[in-house]
Image 1 (cartoon, helix red, strand yellow):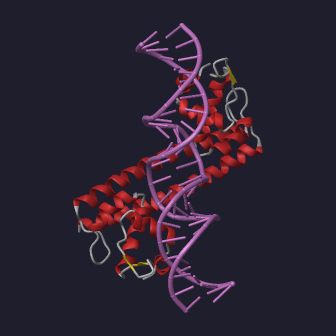
Image 2 (spheres, chains in turn yellow, purple, orange, red):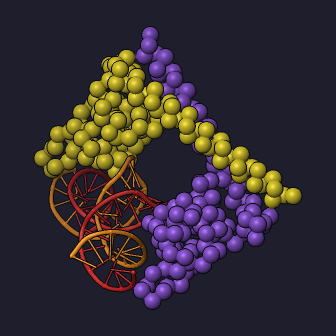
Image 3 (cartoon, chains in turn purple, cyan, blue, green):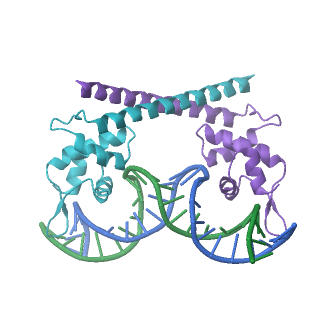
Length: 115
Length: 115
DNA sequence: GAAACCGTAACGGAGCGTAACGGTTA
DNA sequence: CTAACCGTTACGCTCCGTTACGGTTT
């Protein structure tokens, strides 16, 4: 599979895929013209990568959690993944609390401006 | 006022202040040894800058909103400020909705892992 | 000479977007 | 020749943190 096809089939871009590749997350062979030649499994692999990135993890986390995926595309109950996801939920709670406080500040400021 | 004193009095750092300066947000004279010499008003000015940055605005926004502040440190009811703050509240709502959805996904995933 | 300030220049970070330049193959 | 792929640098973005190097004043 060529890189542009992989990008199209995963809803990503060639730039992003090269980025993941350089991070060591997307093994591929090279054809004679030096083009990257991805295996079929790369499609699912990219989806997993993007899923983890979307929940706020970085490429380093992704690298550690990719092995936790099982065949059907779900995460195995390994402690590594459980711990990281739990931590991430806490992080999200913190971020939301911060946003809430900020929003209240903005709303109060706006209210005062109207008086 | 020297830069390190200004940093201490505003809870910021010399690096940040030089950054704001380079962005044209902190007018200052230079003493003989080329040291920045900030006026007393700079203290309040830096507080206003940090306040705006903390609610998620960038330095470009800060530059446009600084003139909207009035003597007592509050924002005047100018349309520029009202509009920008309103937009920012919307942005925060969007971000929070995104975080909520992500959190639910993570929670669901964790629940499935425990089964 | 050392300590304690100040200055500028420039890399790093996270995840790509976006040129810029070049080779290959149909 | 052109089109359509691919490849590898490398800068830009956002707000500074963090060296690195150098001058001045006490």
